[in-house]
Image 1: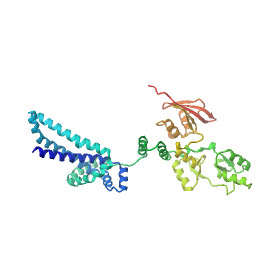
Image 2: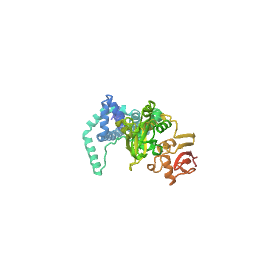
Image 3: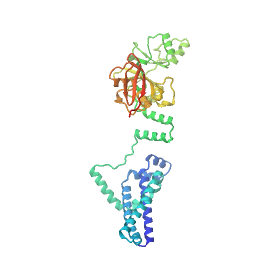
Image 4: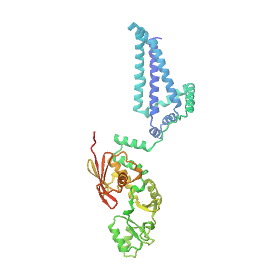
Length: 424
């Protein structure tokens, strides 16, 4: 074989190998979501890439067959065409064969393998849609060989009980990772990142994590005087007040809105807490519902206020639409009374009823032990201390010191959390 003929053969083999290498990386690494978007925008070749990803058997087989065939052919051509000239140069057949092998291998490794693969990784989806049709043609040409090898591989996998179907199910962890990557790259603003993260968190947090607990519920007995009701409504910041029989939260008959009640009083009309025009039916929800489920219930019923009951039919708290939305908005809004106040770079004042999810986020703690057993930082302290907490009680966990500053009866009002210096 002449040097010119050998050079042309090597160039053709080089081009074929480069094409297959680039197609292999681009088609295999193409992001399914981006390909779906390209298909919706009218790029029909993106559908071919998706189909090839879902059925990769023929694609993988033709890649391996072609690359191995090219490697063998290139070695044979290079050995027969280049070695004679190198033998004249070095006057040694062994050295000529070694140099010929190194030259051909280096040339194909650089131009037919490394460079095409790196190029394919830089613009994966764009290159994938451009090379998918030629790859489909190559698969058609090598169909008989593919049928043999692919069929043999399928039989072996079936015998071994191994599934080769591509799994592209998107999980919440995948979405969190994408959001984190977007925030680090500057695609998502910090506020947008927190907003999306809070929305996903709603599916995991239960209503009890943000409810107004039983001990803070302001309610009226049906026999409460109008003057007392007006005085309480003026003093309290709430808009809705439960109405009960026998001054018992387990006998709720509905709720009244302060605006409607006070409007009638100002008009000097006779009012009663049991007046059907004022008393509205209360929405009861179990304490096991997530915030997302409560939001859906508010949407379907048109309500924005609900009473939370536990498995023993006892009222444990109330929740409003504003409470739910405060979790969604998170750091985008500023509350008058912040439950977590950072004093210094390494210390925080935290209200005892702060949801544990907010504490974990503020302190950047990976995880807390048995966090399914409590919902607030007070519950965390009770779990760790294994007793009813009292003032000055402290624990250390995850390089933080948790100290109780103030208690009221059995309730923790305020805590000081300090980050400890890491020891070598």
